[in-house]
Length: 189
Image (cartoon, rainbow, N blue to C red):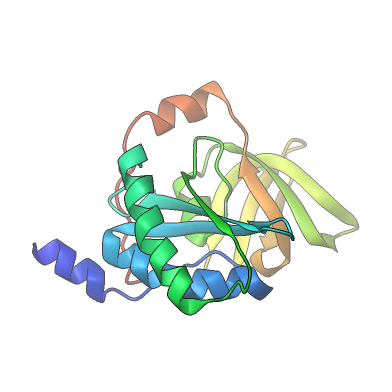
């Protein structure tokens, strides 16, 4: 019970980066997710006529997210988003886990999945290129960069603010690693 109380009081930190409507939705739903024992991985809004709000979440304890968890999150966040009224037309909500070949949206993702292969696309070119692939080396909160060892052996520091998308590549090593629960990381840093 004490762990739950600490989790509820914990600040929402290391949020994924979003802009516009997705940023507003992330700010609205993240505190509720934290109170429920989950973490926000990504928000995406797809479509114009009847937009779909896609919310990707992780369990804060490092365990695997279940269908029941997704249903619980859907009910809670649906109510929160209805009250906030950020989308002024009909919309639908999709809740999912991050999956094995998950996006890398937070510093902790880059740290937790160090040693695994990823593909990265930059919004702003870095040294004349926008696409990178290689082994995740971690991230540095102080410099707000993620590190990747490229296929040619060179290492690159990628400014997190300039990432368009980064995603793990499905490999046997990743499947094996994600079959084991990840240890929970400290949310107070």
